[in-house]
Length: 578
Ligand SMILES: *[C@@H]1O[C@H](CO)[C@@H](O)[C@H](O)[C@H]1NC(C)=O
Ligand SMILES: *[C@@H]1O[C@H](CO)[C@@H](O)[C@H](O)[C@H]1NC(C)=O
Ligand SMILES: *[C@@H]1O[C@H](CO)[C@@H](O)[C@H](O)[C@H]1NC(C)=O
Ligand SMILES: *[C@@H]1O[C@H](CO)[C@@H](O)[C@H](O)[C@H]1NC(C)=O
Ligand SMILES: [Zn+2]
Image 1 (cartoon, rainbow, N blue to C red):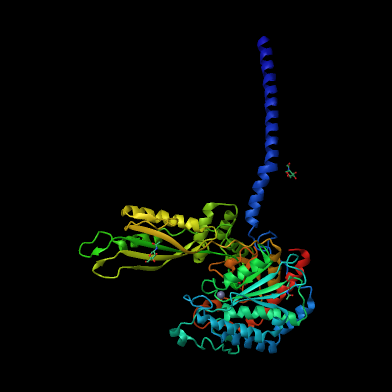
Image 2 (cartoon, rainbow, N blue to C red):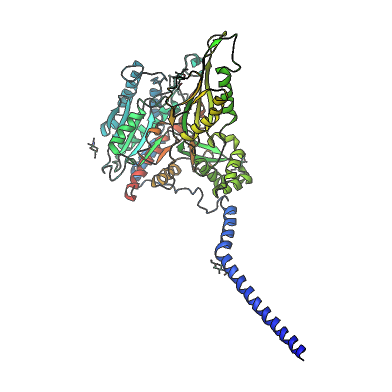
C-alpha cells in the first residue's frame, strides 16, 4: 500500500512536474516568439523582402526616385523660348553664332606666361568683342565685370538681394585645346572655319566648350527678350584657361564671386559635363556628375654619385628607379564600389530603371550587399564591372622617366613622374602614404637616404631617393541629391530633354567625372555643383580634344531651352526657400 501510495504519489508528482515544465516551456516559447516577432523576425523578413525588391524594376522603392517633370509657372517666357528653339530661322541664327566664335582660335597653351606679359592671351579680347557684338541685349541688362582681364563675369541682377535668393551660376570656358600644326591636314574641315554642313557644326571648341557658352548666353538673351525679370540673380562666368591650370581665370573668377557672395552664397553651379545624355545598360540616362576624382602628380628622384662606366655598382640610379616603377605598377590601387561613390548611385539607377536583362542578377545581388555595408562585395563588384574600372579606383600612370646623359658615364640622377586620379574615397595623404610605404624599403635595401613627401629635401646626402608632390587636388565633395536644387535640376532635365530612343524614359542619374573642370575652385560657394551637358555626348565628346571635333546642330539648337527652363524653375523655387 505504502508502495502503491508511493507509486501513485510519484505518478502525480511526475504529472505535476510535467505540467510545470510544460508551462515554463510555453511561457519561454511565447516569450521567444513575441521577441522574434517584434524584433528579429520582422528584421529578417524585412531584409529578405528588401533584397528581393530593392532593385526590382518599377518597384515603388525609394532607390533612384525620379523628380517630377518641372514646368515653369512663367508660361509666357517658356512658350517664347520653346517657340524660338523650334524655329528654323532661329536655328540659322544660333548656328551662325557658334560658327563665328569657333573662328576665333582661343587656344590655351601649357607654357603660357601671365596675362599682360604673354601676348598670346590677346586673342581673348576678340572673344569678348564677339560676345558684345552678338549679345547687345545681354550687355544692356547684365553687368560685365572682369576677373584678371579675361575672366568674364556677367551678372543679371534679380529683384531680390542675394541674401534672400542665392544666385544661380553657370560656367563655361572660352579657351580651347590647341590644334597641333601637324594634325591640321587630318581635319575634314579646317579646325577654325566653323563649317556647317547642314547637319553638323565642325571645329575646335564645338562641344568643348563654345557650344555650351553660346547656349548659356542664348538662354539669358531669350529670357530677356521674352520680358522675364528674375527674382534670383543669374550669373554667367567664362574662364580663359580651363584646359590648362585654371589659375589665370578660373581661380580669379571664383575668388571674385567668393568675395561678393561668400561661403554657400550660390544656389547652384552648372558647368560642362563629361557624359551628357547617354545609353548604358540599354537605357537612356542624363548623367549629371556630382563629384570629380582628385588629382596628384608625384615626382620621384633617385640620385647617387656617378663615375666611370668601367667600374659600375651593381645597381645604379636607373636600375633602382626601374625597381621603384615596377613596385608601383605591381601594387596598383584596388578597385572598390562604395556607397560614397556617385557611381554606386548610377548602378542603383540602372538596376531599378534599365531593362532587367541588361544587368546580371549577380551584379544586382552584389549591389544590395554593398548597400548593407559588405566590404567584400565592394571589391567583388569592382571586379564584376572591370570595364568601368577607373571610376572605382585611384588610377596611376607613369608618364615621364629620364636618366643618364652619356653611355660611358654612370648616371647621377634618374627622375620620373606619375599622374594619379584619386578615387572619391581616397585622399592625397592616403596616396602619399601608399607611395612612401612602397619606396622606403627599396631605398633602404640599397643603403640610400629616403625623403618622403613631408621632408625638407635639404639632405646633403648624395645617395638618396626623394618623393615629392606637384599639382595636388583632393577628390571633389559629392553634391547632395536630397537638395532643392537637385530636384529643380532633374525636374528641368526631365521636362526639356528627350531619351535617345522614343520608346523609353530619360532617367536622371548621378555620375562621377574622372577629370577636373574649373568647378574645382568653387567648392566653398555651394555644395550644389552639377557638371552636365544637355546633349548626347556619345560621339561628340570622343573628339573633344582631338581632330574633327563637332556638334550635331539638332541637339545644339535645343540647349538654350534647357538652360532657360532651369533659370525659370530656379526662380520659381525662390518662394519654396533656398
Ligand atoms: C507581430 O507583430 C506585428 C507588429 O509588430 C503585429 O501586427 C502582429 O500581430 C504580431 N504577430 C503575432 C503573432 O504576435
Ligand atoms: C545689383 O544688385 C546689387 C546688390 O543688390 C547692387 O549692389 C548692384 O548695384 C546691382 N547692379 C545693378 C547693375 O543694378
Ligand atoms: C534593348 O531594349 C530594347 C527594348 O527596350 C530591346 O528591343 C533590345 O533588344 C534591347 N537590346 C539589348 C542589347 O538588350
Ligand atoms: C628632382 O629632380 C629634378 C631634376 O631632375 C629637380 O628639378 C628637382 O628639384 C628634384 N626634386 C627633388 C625634390 O629632389
Ligand atoms: Zn571643357
